[in-house]
Image 1 (cartoon, helix red, strand yellow):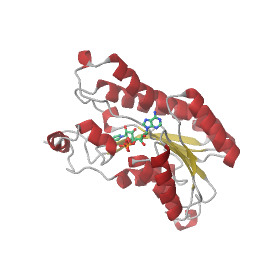
Image 2: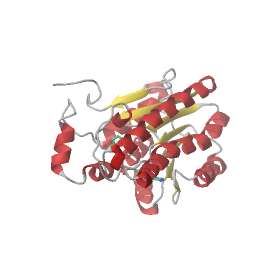
Image 3: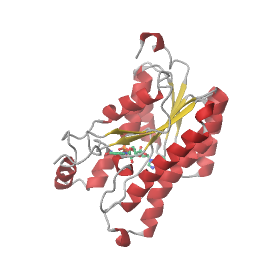
Length: 263
Ligand code: NAD
């Protein structure tokens, strides 16, 4: 962090959805190290409380925990942002990261239509509703940053994962459009596109099968699975005040997975 920006996050408010585990938790810790006031949002109380305790251990202000909140529910997201406004009166950055894996691979015609709705509701509608309620407060604050979590599966197809891929391609389209809508309001809106990351979600994705994980690794030129902190550090950079000209971008952090054919 440039020395003159060292105190930038102190007194600034950062909201993270899906903050109880994986990439969301790691990103909360990254902002906590910079002294930000965190808002940790998700469905279950216990994992969010765990993140809140870690945030406090790092010396950041006590986080506002908003549990029982489903990102795909318009009323839940509306009341969450009202809580943020009444607690702090501002919002400086939002990381719209909550998401789910498709339960099982299925060729497109075999994919259950209810599963399609579940994945699209959380992964795409959830990002839309998050932004819908965050943007007015960001605007009132005078600007800020949004990072939405897409995926390498938002840039290339993955056989058997139509719902997951469609949701993540959708997140990128939504991000670019919102970036255009708010480009003159100093709200910088970008997507991050992780490759495989060591979190509960990828365990669900692979069905805990080592052979499936090994097959995924063969598609990563760098040949490793990322730690959540490796994604979190990029999200932090993307929200940084010196990142003041990038908007509408879909940034790959994927060990080269979508760079091309590695042979
Ligand atoms: P994770 O399962 O640890 O985190 C997902 C979080 O979202 C969980 O805390 C979960 O409780 C929360 N969540 C799920 N549905 C929700 C809802 N309806 N409302 C509120 N919260 C909800 O897994 P992760 O890998 O850290 O996933 C974070 C994001 O990263 C997801 O959007 C995922 O699609 C994306 N991603 C993950 C990988 C990977 O390999 N792990 C790769 C690319 C993208």
